[in-house]
Image (cartoon, rainbow, N blue to C red; front, side, top):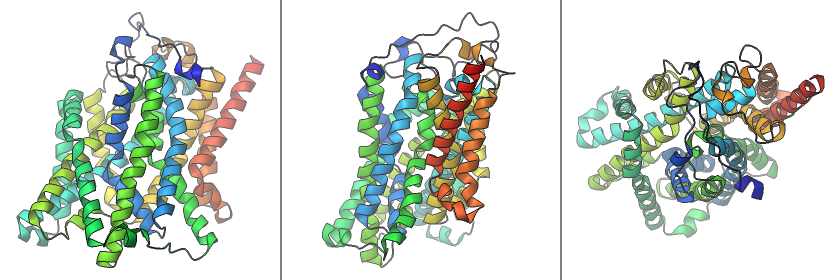
Amino acid sequence: MKNLFDAELIETDVSSIQDKKLINKDLSPTKISERSWSTYNIAALWIGMSVCIPTYMLASGLIAGGMNWWQALLTIGLGNIIVLIPMVLNAHAGTKYGIPFPVLARASFGTNGSNVPALLRAIVACGWFGIQTWIGGQAFNSLIILLLPDWAIFSWGSAIGFLIFWGMNVYFIVRGIESIRWLESFAAPFLLIVGFGLLIWAYVNAGGFGPILSQPSKFETDGEFWKFFIPSLTGMVGFWATLSLNIPDFTRYAKNQKAQMLGQAIGLPPSMISFAFIGIAVTSATVIIYGEAIWDPVNLLSRFKNPVVVIISLVSLIIATLTTNIAANVVSPANDFANLSPKHINFVRGGLITAFLGIVMMPWKLLSDFSAYIFGWLVGYSGFLGPIAGILICDYFFVRKRVLNSQDLYNPEGEYKYKNGFNHKALISLFAGIFVALIGLIIPAVSFLYDYAWFVGFAVAFLFYKLLMNMNKANG
């Protein structure tokens, strides 16, 4: 670990590269003088991204699925500790070389082949953008109903709320990255305030934490529990599987490896566990208060009687969801789309592509119930992203021993050209990992492979890539 901490930062000069088709302002390596994020900054970034409505819904979704409070919290905590490992490892190259995720992927997939993992990751981000926008849109719709009660009878109210909130996101995308940084610093505390307010409400109205935390598990046997726990754990890892790939987009600004490693360790698992506990406690309380588990905080707030409290809470949710959505689900896919054609796609255009695809992916279906959210969405896409993580980590740490020709990452005729810009060994490994991870959806006898989709995909792609690259060295 000491060697990882002490890795020397490298500044790459790409000005001498004549062919600029792999370079633009957003993809260029950061200068060492631009790498100013401290441990605190990295931790604060994770706190801001973790404290969001999907985290709350993730926790309460486990309660709705049958877990008791400590089973749900243990599942979330373990999943986030596991995903922290690839998060820290993939972040290393970003900090050392100042490069974003799509550029790092060029080392293993090739200068053109890197578009395959970048697009897979970007499409998932579009889905997340849609999910967050739908949540914010429902909060906006609830706010309109509170101010104009007749709006409730309008059947298109939810859709209009969604489109209004979508437009708010697009406004900040068009204004550019600086407006997003301003929004981040302004809006960070709002969701924390709402979360703790709901926790106090739950404590008072459910008669303290005793009744809340005494709600038993609905699983009658150990077999029933494990059948639910295993895919749920995969879903918890899948929750941040996207960021575990593109974390270099952020850690390229870190001061050093110690800052990115400690910042992530301090910011990610504790924030997820803490805010998840709020979701768990409040959802458990709704079983006592309303006789059913209400895992959507917007739905829960709409049942409150005090209009002032509801208005303040909904406005806070709208602002907090806006800032989380843009930071977590626009910055990275914008870079991924820019990697397709750096000359023609910049941050704003990449962000607009993300916004439009977020509508096409119909997020209202992904959030139709906890089963679709956890077992369909989170577990399903983890089968695509786990193999990418396996290849990136294998290539950087075990094939290249943390040494990259950083200038050639931007050179179409350089070391990472492979064959016409594609490393077919990486693509074979990727598809092998995806196939094995998702085959359980088709063949019931091996459904356990899908339950472990991220882990299975990671392991298969890692081993395939190492074997194929070793064969390449032997033949060379």
